Amino acid sequence: MSIRKAKGYRYGIHIPDMKDLTKDKPIEQFPAPKKVYISLSQHIGAPANACVEVGEYVKKGQLIGKENGVVSANVYSSVCGTIVAIEDIVNDMGQKQKYVVIENDFSNEEILFDNIKDFEPSTLIARIREAGIVGLGGAGFPTAVKLTPKNQLEYLIINGAECEPYLNCDNRLMLERTDDIYKGICYVAKALNITKIIIGIEANKPEAIHAFKCFNDLDVAILKKQYPMGSEKHLIYCTTGRKVPVGKMPFDVGVCVQNIKTMIACYEAIDLNKPLTEGVLTVSGNGVNEPKNLKVPLGTSFNEIVEFCGGAKDNVVKVIAGGPMMGRALIGLNQFTRKTDSGILLLTNTEANTNEPTNCINCAKCANNCPMRLMPMFIEQFTLIGDYKSAEKYGAMNCIECGSCSFNCPARRTLVQSIQTAKAKIKEMKQNAK
Ligand code: SF4
Ligand code: SF4
Image 1 (cartoon, rainbow, N blue to C red):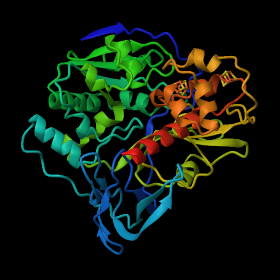
Image 2: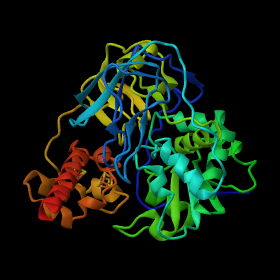
Image 3: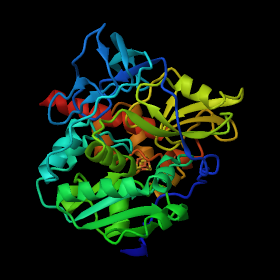
């Protein structure tokens, strides 16, 4: 074991972390709701195929969506009850997705996997795949795919940065479930045949840093409080000194990065034989009466979660799924929890700037702070006139959507949204060209 200060990087920003609202609040179990709406597309890749029918009775932990290809993931019921609908619902990203709607009968019977037959890497990876585990930090990439790289990797890095303001779920898990995280890490390291393991934790979480000091085979890297430290490329550079080139992936430089919640899901799948049916998230912001950290069944309505937290105050001006930097602004709370959710924020006008954008004043603040060294103002301008080829030339596809540019812009330009549009259009153009 070693404990050391990690490197910093040159750009990025320093933002108030706003974590005090929930930092000391233990994770509470949210009571199972009367109805859950479980999306069959909670991951990157092909949506799962419904393998149940309307009217069928299912138990908690029963497979309801079967993975549909290599990059896909199984989906399990989070309650016991009757399937009342399998229907299309438009999600917060405006995409129509298939949801399985289950009416809970509160009998709480649970289906578990059989004990695994051995602890060989292939068996561990097969279990992680079967359990429907995906990157729970937000990416939603199927974990089993990440555990089968084409080359032998050297480092496993656990991302304990949680650099998004307000969010505290990883921090609380590192304190409350340290041993379970460690067991999950050991299984994943075994699956990858890696002995060099680093857990990177931001310096503003001293208790979590202390909690992981006791494991001999784990290096603890204390990360500078700097946004976006949790970005894979920056985390890899700060902990190992390796640079992931543009267009390349962590495995190209011999590294696999995994998230805290994903490690707990791996532990539960392997040791407790449980598929992934619940998520942990932070409900925060000055617009919610009782901010909390909660463990919630997948498919729970955001409305019910906010009610459980004492309801919303009258002065809420913005609702966000996730953190304020990378999360998605919502038009309401009519959404349902997914595997990758990490927070629901209700922000007041002192916390969220709702001013309308004005013209760009060419101050270059956005470019000066971009951790990927892009020129967001130009990418936005090209996007606005529909010149996506030029947006691509200016590196739109390398944007990690961290939100640092928008945060700094005195003209309140919606730079990230423009870049997201450009990325979607560029992908579409490439697909059409094939
Ligand atoms: S352009 Fe992309 S990577 Fe750069 S600051 Fe903006 S969101 Fe972050
Ligand atoms: S920070 Fe805003 S105003 Fe300044 S150059 Fe960038 S887009 Fe323009």
